[in-house]
Image (cartoon, rainbow, N blue to C red; front, top):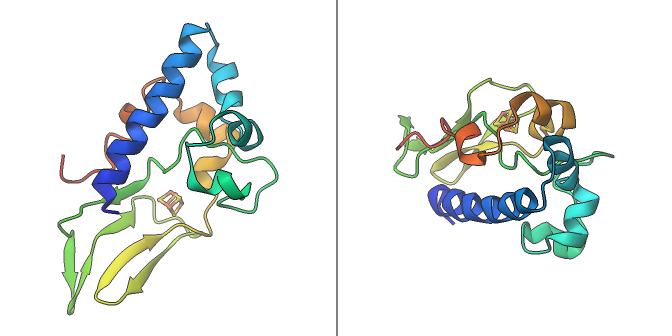
Length: 143
Ligand code: SF4
């Protein structure tokens, strides 16, 4: 799935959940806690395909899903730059040591599978905005 399609789909899924919680007068702290993996698996089965298998995307004891994907992720489905005969489509804006660029055929993509940065509760609290799209406003380089 192109990044943009995933991003737009995820924006509306995220908003739907947050709107529901706001209607129930959840506080910021309660909203963040609601996005804890263990709760999300139970309550929001369609939010992430991994929930079906009760599988975490990262091996962490306490994993928060509010900031999936990551505010530091940058992408452009049309390509960001050419590197030799390959095209780079995404990268990490903070160059996290836990992430890396991966080559997949003639495409280069950011591989975040080893990075837990956006899933740490303290990080979510620091970056928090009720509007997920606002936190992610710099991700889509084509906007
Ligand atoms: S490597 Fe980590 S900080 Fe960088 S975009 Fe991926 S998840 Fe975010």
